[in-house]
Amino acid sequence: MSRKPHIVILATGGTIAGSAAAETGGAYTSGKIGVDDLLSVIPEIRNLADISGEQIASIGSQDMDESIWLPMVKRCNELLARDDIDGLVITHGTDTMEETAFFLHLTVRSSKPVVVTGAMRPANAHSADGPMNLFEAVATAMAPESHGRGVMVVTNDTVFGARDVTKSCTTAIHTFQAPNFGPLGHIHAQHVEFQRKPQRKHTTESEFHVDNLNELPKVGIAFAHAGGDSAIAVNAFIDHNYDGIIHAGFGNGNFNHKVGDALQRAARQGVTVIRASRALSGAVTEAGEVDDESYGFVASGLLNPQKARILLQLILTMTRDRQHIRAFFKAY
Ligand code: GLU
Image 1 (cartoon, rainbow, N blue to C red):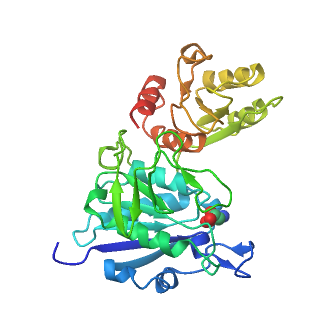
Image 2 (image 1 turned 120 degrees about the horizontal axis):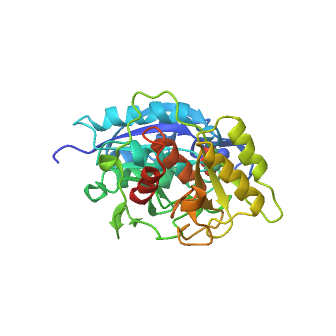
């Protein structure tokens, strides 16, 4: 390439754009600092690439939802279709970063790199992690080796796949982990070294079309605990006409008998029921204690509840047939 790579930064807010009241304090407001100010603390970034920026939201990512995701992926696809743009970086709060990354992983239509990054410490804290994360996100987005790896999350010198990554710690800068398979690669001195590629379908192989949608099907998550009655949540979802329910069950997607009855009632009424797990790692398998065929449920495999929810929302735009849904959960 004779010209410098052109990377577009789409800013959404989060702690990377957060402003603390004191440089050592924990209290701050996320989403306050714009994309130009973020870039001004790392002028070296412009030696790597030509950068342009767009502010598409200014929120703490706890407020992220489909009203931002749907226009965001449209904008990503418009930008990625341009010959003069080589990759995208999305700055984002860490709370729901894994969900935005997975949504984009399933809906972006390009093999060009899309990298989501953020920070655990506000922009004006001592040892703020945002500037280095942004620098490394740009380095990853411009690397030829990054093509075809789906949407990635870059923080703390590490590149994660959108399907695998989860926020594992409330406050530490090494919060992002991929508990089942580990990272896709690492970054050192602006050089990205990859170890592997995602195996499941994503981006250019994805069958999900959201361009003409203004909303997604309604899918809720009910959470299991000892002595608990998540049947109350399940019944509320049924009563509020939800299209799907993810049950964040015990261990291999197990539930107590009260919840089992409510979930079966949901399935009989045409609400899709996915068995996921509150455990941090491992797959919810079909051959465990629960016979999904007789209950009318689908197992989530390795997707955690919040990611199973996003995949189901997208699947329900195409089909409500349980065997098709099951096949999608094995393919994506
Ligand atoms: N609530 C903030 C957010 O997700 C905090 C997390 C962060 O960015 O570190 O936007």
